[in-house]
Amino acid sequence: FFHWFDYMSWYPLGRPVGTTIYPGMQITAVAIWRALGKLGSAISLNDVCCLVPAWFGVSASILVGLFAAECSGRKSAGAFAALIMAIVPAHIMRSVAGGFDNESVATTALVATFYCWVRALRDRPTARDGEATADSYAFGVLCGLAYVYMVSAWGGYVFVVNMIGAHAAALAAGGRYSSKLHRAYSLFYVIGTAGATRVPPVGLAPLRSLEQMLPLLVFLGVQLLEAVEVERRKKRLTPAQVWKRRGGRGG
Image 1: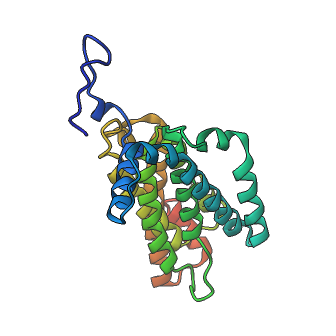
Image 2: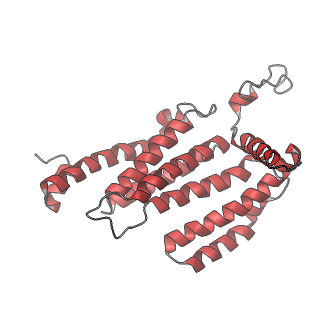
Image 3: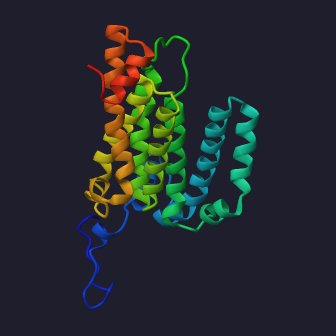
């Protein structure tokens, strides 16, 4: 696929298709088709491509429900959010059977990334003194993987990484920094950026593009905050001493 050169596109120059499009949608369709074939289904690849938008439309609606329930703490809010997602016209346009387009897959990947992000930050009563939680590790990794899938499917990935970066920065600025935020964001950013650079149309854009500098700066910032947090636990620093060190004035 990545070596596919179409001599009939952009005639007479031709087009290196495999390195100029986001491959997530095509790879997803072929993977589903092969999996169904191993299960004994005789469905054709064409039919799979026709049904992928509908299948992923359902999964996107379910993920929106989980996302809303996680943020609100209420299952009823999740059910209502899933219902709205299922009938909103903008989503229906991208989830109708036969509408095989990048957004059909990318919407599910986008919502999955956001859900894993908020799930990684879930409070745990057993976590003391701002320590990291098991969720921050597990869902931080899943968030990064979901983001890589998002990058492979659609160019709108820039919105996703900036939203998560802005949210992490807002939490830190609002006095809600903790080690679980550090673990979740660090795993998301490292895995996500490493994976994104392997997508041909993206390359090193996450490290070079000005519009993606905010997430990088947030990543560097949370490393500094975590260093101060580790020192706080070891030396039993007071809040005033912590803020001094965060400002670079501590000894």
